[in-house]
Length: 141
Image (cartoon, rainbow, N blue to C red; front, side, top):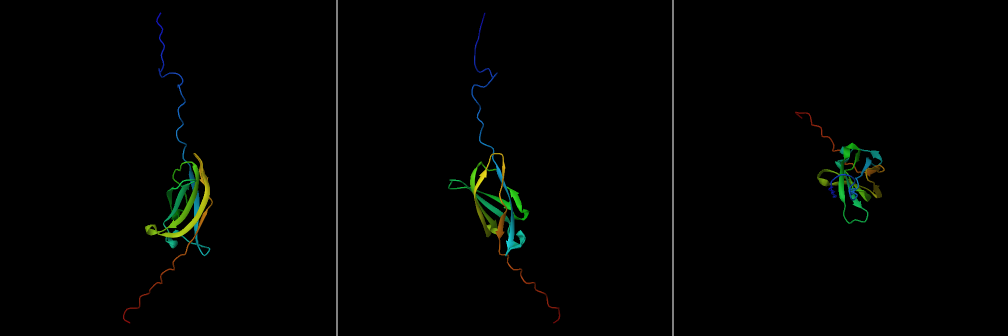
């Protein structure tokens, strides 16, 4: 009688637990408003194009940015590694010009596989006055 024993025949249970890999990313969602002296204004009136958010992980020296289109009034971030963040908001116009600073929100916890709701962000802007309309003088005068 011939007996054979061996390992690694790819059947049965694995010899060791397979790693889970990195945690799933999370996201955050927010909405925003713009006002001039308490009166609501549009992004177009404020000459704002985007909402820029600087994300700084707790205890880190550097972070990264996310950008939202101003005119939508709300958005959800790109995928973010789970951690606790400081979020710094600003309203941005053409050419990267800062239209208005926004708040800094501390202690935002991004959890694996979840969306974190951020309280609405309010930007106070100074809308430039509309240029006066020039009317053409009647011809022949």
